[in-house]
Amino acid sequence: MKNLHHLIAWLLFLCLSAAFCGCKKEKVVENNLTLRYQDGKFRIAQLTDIHWGDEGSDTVLNCMLIEAVANEQKPQLFVLTGDIVTSGDARKGWQRLLAILETTKIPYAVCLGNHDGEAQPGFPADSVMAWLRLWGKHCVTLNPAPDVHGFNTSLPVVGATDDSVRNVIYCIDSNSYPADSALLRYSDYDWIHPDQIDWYTEESRKYAEANGGKPVPSLAYFHICVPEFTEIVKQPLTYGRYGESCCPAGVNSGFFARAFMQKDIMGMFVGHDHSNDFIGQRAGICLGYGRQSGVMANSPSAPMGCRLVELSEGRRAFRTWIVTLQGEEPAYYYPMGYRNGQCRETLPAVAFTPQKQGVAYTMYSDPTAKDVKTMFERGGIIGRGVWSNFDRWTKVPEDHFGLVFHTMIRIDETAPYRFTLTSDDGSKLYIDEQLVVDNDGSHSVRERSGFVRLEKGFHRVRLEYFEDTMGSTLSLKYCTPTMDECRVPDSVLYLPE
Image (cartoon, rainbow, N blue to C red; front, side, top):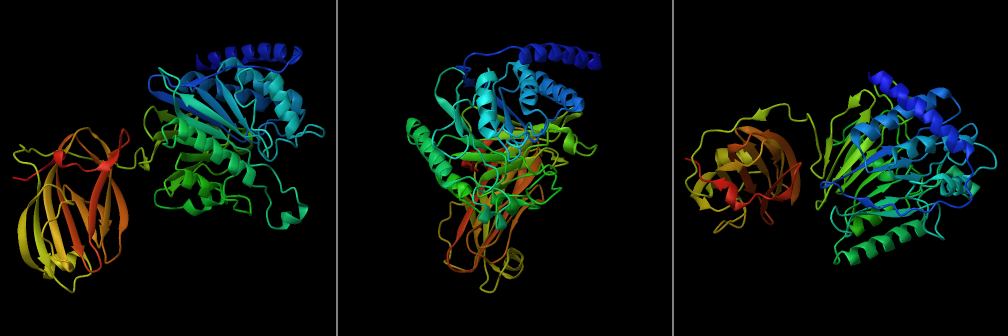
């Protein structure tokens, strides 16, 4: 039945493609497409590095992939991140590909790659964009910013029930090769230029100003990664396939740094490096590759596909996953940094009847301790009592002391949780006797996180902390895929029996 469904879709595509290629348009497409939330969600499907040619296999497989994504994932926007039509008759290639996209009636955005202007002589990137303006009825990147390098567009996403901007999608041209041939010895690829960064900054400022001065949570899509992608490779919270070295420009023009300072971009998504689809975070910004969407890098271990990103209305958060014709791969949650399946077991709730809120503490002192274990094995007890939270201290020594907290935490939903300990000096967090966060040692203020999946109900918490010298800090935060990170509140902490 599924094969029949694909065959029918394929025959329909052939008919539409023939009609599409045979007609002539006399004027540039004009559309008033609005990107809008539906039921609190906005879903984006990234297609990258299709490398479309004249081969029939490209047409068949890509038709099947786009059709499956459109029908099963129901995105509200496709984003094509470069190296789309790269060989053969480019005009016919674009007509055939756009015929497929247009049949979905889903808006789509186009970011060009370094090979998109090389498909055939006399059809450079400018011609590609002019072609889109003639044929792209559902294309939302028809009016790029003027007088700026490349083709750059900001796309507002408005609320489900009003026209206030909830998010912005930046489609940025990472360009192709250095215009100055003397620079080719230093960089194989071009970069996002200063005038583009200035354009983005001004757009970001305008959206923030209209949002009461608050940065609007945004995403950026482009083809060639920025150098910061190389810094998250094989890090503990980086997931996915690293099959080849990242190939950014040899020049760091500062786009990532500007995004960091503007405080609006949550994630940057790219293509270009076909054997990479990893995702991670640096300085609070998610950096992710899409899955290669053409037959060029298709393999049994990493079949061609696309990356989905689902925004949640009113939250600075999203989840993202890769989908192929074979199915879905595990989802990743930003900013939590959690990937589905990471926690293999769920810690069961314990029987407990809450009586009084608070945390019980025991205070120790040892001037020689350099970690929590030494403090509590050799230190002498100098106090006991109850506080409302881990960070509500009163009457503690200036240096050389330790605290052991015991409390019961109320968990309101069965879910994976990320706990984050910030301390100066060392600290450790145990839940139901399982070590969740290790931030031990003598150090200045430092943050460490850990994941645990908890069943709804009550769980035992032990937090160990010690202060060596020069300042004391302790705080505990948590979040879930559906709950923004916050300080663990007093209201969920109860004195153990």
